[in-house]
Length: 283
View 1 (spheres, rainbow, N blue to C red):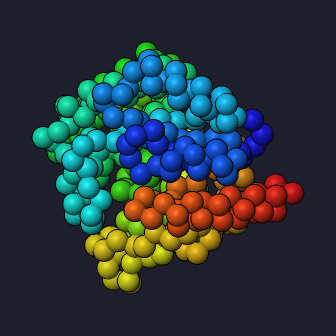
View 2: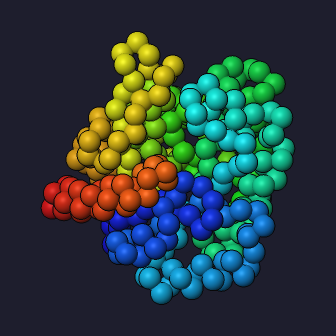
């Protein structure tokens, strides 16, 4: 696969990913896959989906976990419900991520990803210390499957994420960098953050967003928009990725499943934009 193949976030039967038919119709060669529902994480599902991918010339680069009960309604709700951070669901979700890792192995994919949630700011707290233990446990399981784990950015500052990765101290923990999330959550300028965490970036999202009102960043959501219409700056983003030596897929994510027609149109527009900018940056 050549440097920077176009990708898209897709799904089988769960999550916000675009339908596979759209992937096929737009001729997109790589996908990150949202893990299917628990009941369909089977060898049969894996074989059937791999056959579809082979037929369409599509490579799966990462399988993302997600959980029942997660809500991105607003920042406060996200902090309370998303990922492995919420303590009342932590153990069950960690077990489910292990199952997702096992399903990922059936697909022959060497990377799993997730939003871990809002990592506690107090690194001396019991919640933080327990999260370290949980994350190490998950990483050790993932490693037995020959896999790396990618944490998606956005809910922490770059500095706090680096601190957490350093504290976890496992060699198969990396980052899925999403520049729009830094804007949506108000956690930092995306290009500046990318430069800080660059050595850990092994996969990315190409997503765009506009900032919340000045003074409300980190309190109110920013607004996700079509690629090229927001504040990320795609040429600067790809230029920075190039300087950092990133050569993986440019995976488009467009989270408007309630409007599949617009979603497909925006993804098509994103493919054109990324193809154009990629040529400009790589020469």
